Length: 323
Image 1 (cartoon, rainbow, N blue to C red):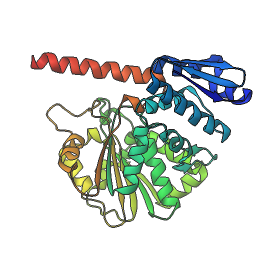
Image 2: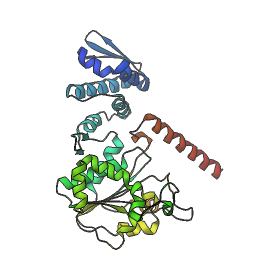
Image 3: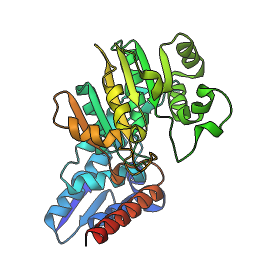
Image 4: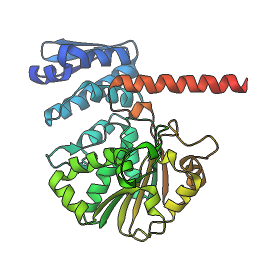
């Protein structure tokens, strides 16, 4: 089976990528041959469906190129995965849907289908759980959604919080008062907000109390209305802390709870509030539970492989324990 797509030389160069890496990914993952002959691409395979999927993928990538979007290896990898599921049209949505714009004019967009599903659930639910491994953009996308909600007038405040337990460290050994002790753990949230708003604007919003970043313990006894509230690293919240947090928000608020259940630093005797709450509330109206996977990792590709290797080891250990 062969299919031919007309293409000009400039578009072909952008499509093929540096050292033809983009096309090599397509050929390797979809088991096809893609050749440039004159002003046309020739797609060849023994499987008619695969040829059609490849042609649809390439035609979609050409549309993106002509609209001025870069087609890099990550976008091609994502496109191949979507093509296999006959969901190639999702590539256009991922490329064009902007969540927020940073102070420097960078458009923040979802890079995977899992991320897009997560963002859509945040839009349409009051409470969303984002559960997945490191590098899947759980926190960054939640912060982007918070900034977008504030700028559009949907909320009046942005509140970000984390449990003050991390990586087995004891806060008592750190210098300073409680705020000084937890600041290093809240740094990723500071950095994300500073990027979105710009450092000066971010500092002014902090001074005015419009942005609040605090340890989870500070949430007790408060009612948080008209706010976008993010609980980050929630796998380290106990059951009691999670229940306390989930009963804090009032009218007009939106809540996102993020965490990685493979990185729980609580004592073995303590139950993770994230695991418990996501199970208890999964079928509750206006609550969404989103699971991101290694396919949604947007850091270095090696991170994706590391996460997958650990996941496979854990499954093997679990199987051996049950055997």
